[in-house]
Amino acid sequence: MITATDARLKMQQVDWLIAHGCQMECAIEEVGVTHAGYSMWLREHEGAVPVAVDRLYHLQTENSRLRRKLAKLSVELNSVRKVPGTDVPDQPMAA
Image (cartoon, rainbow, N blue to C red; front, side):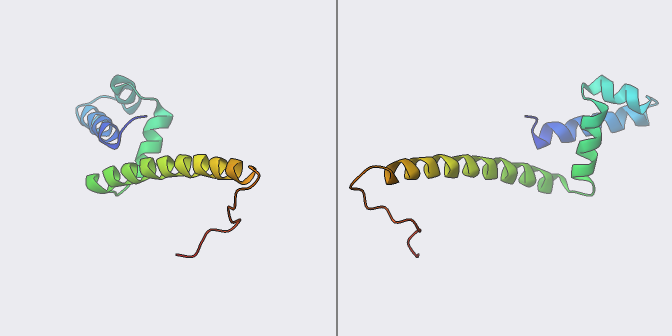
């Protein structure tokens, strides 16, 4: 997966190439991305400040990690509930 910093750098490279006379398609190919990928980055980062873009990618990565962990724990909890003699409530305890 490409990081926010890498995406931003490639976008800046494309902008620089275009500013120096290269056609957009040529500039996008030059930095090694597809037109669709570049367009997606533009939509995702439109009007965003660089720090906000990095924070967004960090939060998306953390969200994915937490979802995987929750799924794993849910599977473990369900397997514990199936063991005879265990007293695991169906609902979580109130905080």
